[in-house]
Amino acid sequence: MAEFEPVLLRRIHQPDSTALAGYLADGGFEGLKKALGMAPADVANYVKDSGLRGRGGAGFPCGLKWTFLPKDHPGPIYLCVNGDESEPGTFNNRILMEQDPLQLIEGIAIACHAIRSKSAYLYLRYEYGRSYRTLKKAIEECYAQNLLGKNILGTGFDLDIYLHRGAGAYICGEETGLIESLEGKRAWPRIKPPFPAIEGAFRKPTIVNNVETLCCVTNILRLGNDWFKSLGVPPDPNNPRDMGSYGPKLYCISGHVNTPCCVELPMGITARELIERHGGGVWKGRKAKAVVPGGISMGFLTADELDTPLDYNGPGKVGCLGLGTAAVVVIDDATRMVDVLYNCARFFAHETCGQCTPCREGTTWMSRILDRMRHGRGRREDLDLLLEVAGSMGIIPGTTICGLSDGAAWPIKNAVNKFRAEFESYIQSGESSVTSAQELMQLAH
Amino acid sequence: MAFLSEDLRNQIQGYIPNYPDKRAVTLWALHIVQDALRCVPLQAIREIAEILELHPSEVADTMSFYGIFRDEQHKLGKDRVWVCRSISCGLRGGEELLEGLCAHWKVKPGDTTADGAITVEFAECLGACEQAPCILVNDEMHGNMTQESVVKLMENGGQAS
Image (tube, rainbow over all chains, first blue to last red; front, side):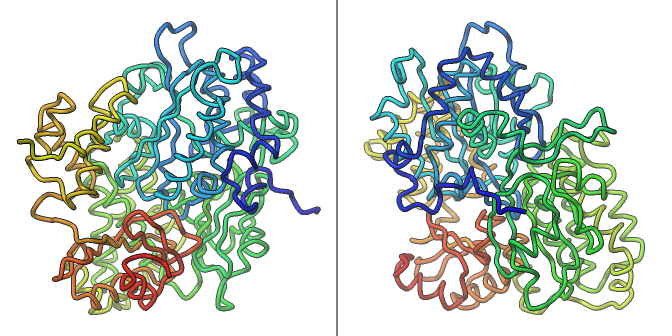
């Protein structure tokens, strides 16, 4: 197989890849020019025909989402760019924003033309200070060259992009949590419907798109939707609901590998190939015990499931929640699953927004049960208790407003079901994996 | 005499035209005040509310939701060091790094050194997993850290030498 030439990441190693002059020299804004020569609805349909699905985790078809806006809406329509990347293991959007901000800005402009929006808010997680500074400079350069502002390139298209910094809350990555946070409130997700396309930011029709999704839009306009459809995995002919997994994808590889990195590949590479060819293999000559396929919310693959293709369908076929953010985290065979699972559960207990009781209480209790287990005080019935709590929280059972809860429950369900024997023998041994120094730290939390 | 300086008020007001609703400036206002004062005092909450035409309880409610903001009783030190403890960093020594730094600076996570120089905190995934373990010093990410490299970095005022 010939080496794939990156498209989304093609410019990141160039010196000064963030400057407008270099971006224009590389054919930058050709995609926007093409889009501005088309009617907005035609741009939306063109993107819809490419098969692009959202890269933020849910995988919703991008062009289709755009068509949910009310027709001929008289007032403002907003685009919110989701740059709140916070799913553990995920850093692809940071690389796109830090290294090639103009590719994103162009994608925002194309999307805004397609949805007839004149204002885009880029919600950026606070921790991404470098992304903020890089984007700020790039946006200023665009205003100076009439690539943003009034009457862009003499076409009559107006667009303002505003950067909005978050304040350290995972839930702001949920699209209605993001909107609430943008409005200056606590980031409590909203009950849907109404969906943001009908009533979103400032009670106006709003589209929320992920950073990588919009970078794909730039390249779909630049290279054509045929190019996009030539990559990835076509729909499964036996599954009439499958929309396929087209295009390139940024895969993040971290944890116990020799060369953690972000790599762009056509959708559908297997976890094994990703780890061995791109992550440099498992570190210290060890073997993988478990692999997170797409951020911790998606659960775990076992060592026997590493040939799973990382497309929108693959992880689900082996009991994971989905592809998620395609952030792969490798856990070696010298690591205890109880420690890994506690780390995941603690994350969600810290990041639950507290609005829905099953999630607020469930995440906290799952974290406490695992902490007790880790201290050598686990009980045999704890495993079923964890499954009971995990099974009762989320939008799948219908007890919470948003999917954070499903994401908190999934690693628990996968770990307990797929590694049950290890948990049972650990509980039986009465061992503790907590050092006395860690005990002291615990008191501080 | 207003508690917030003219400069801080101007900075906050500068964001108002970006939004159809003044309330959307709340996070900016809290960041601006905290960057300058190392916390958001009660009187600042009242004045932010006045500038944004809100009730102070609305500003306080938002502030309380986001763990990044500190009240007067929990004022930040001169520099803030966040040590990531989420999965990718946790698998590569992030928790031990946090423990080691707390022992070195004789603080617990969340606390500030006795001289007021450094506040140490745990962070959930900072989004630099390819450089695990990573830390955030104020507004700057640093990757592949060890206890020694963090201590050296902070002796250098948080600036990479």
